[in-house]
Image (cartoon, rainbow, N blue to C red):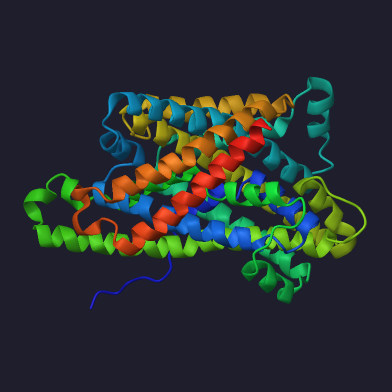
Length: 431
């Protein structure tokens, strides 16, 4: 009998690294400080929806040996629709991630400031040169990590960052001594407090993100290549053997999802609960994760402050790597370019996004307009991507690995919620 792994780290860790970024840290911190544990149910829903969608994306990658962008080029055959879809992907994933990259680098810099607050050269760079040096340092780290084009090395680095931020935020969570009964009520009793509508949408929107689907499908295809497409395997492996190998790969991919996505959700829960325990119904307010890190010191001591700052730094660095990587996979895939990580189209895509993010972050430019535009584009893109993903996982070419009826029902429910979420985010952005 074939052993099926229950848990493991793999490509899904990149998804966790992608959605636990500074934006998520800030959103969760504000949600806990303002509404206590009341919005934890929205986070639980987001993790369930992410798990459903990411399993489908990983299955497309494993079975076809191609990323989601390449698969969608085949699914979307109508020329006008294909052009519109490509423009939407470029707008939401590439242009949008350029804005988010500025936030990733800025957030990582806030964490670095919390750890090295007394560094004189940092203050000198800001006052004399008028730049934020952390933007160049962290952006440079992202460039070095991605330039080699070694997927396995990138995956190991991101696993390390996810483990680091998990330890930091979960330890801070334990130090804050949260109300466990209130956490259970918040998880399983859905309600939207007065004024909590926008924060509810933000909690879901920072977790269920379109570009993570491109990232997961492509990385799963690299980690578990489709055996029927490997050179020489068509003559060496029978159809039954190929089927067996694919089944084994999918079992490993699902164990990876069971490990990484809930861990990412647990980290976000820890951040929200820490803020709720420290600041809900307490005098004083916080305006972001950096304030939360500083404010923890008088309540829980310097260790909590450093843990929170270290977690924020790890979250920023991990997102500064995954956002450009996902954009490169998405753009090269939908345009039909080479997805070789060492190819120039791939490298130029992620390099452009990192450089734009460094400029936005280092000069202190507030990327509000770009981020609002990105949120609108993401709001439009998410239901489209969910719909196209459902078409891709029901393609006859997937054979017995296509969606079952139960999977289609679950995917359809997520699609409907994505449609409502997308419409709501567009309305909020324009209003």
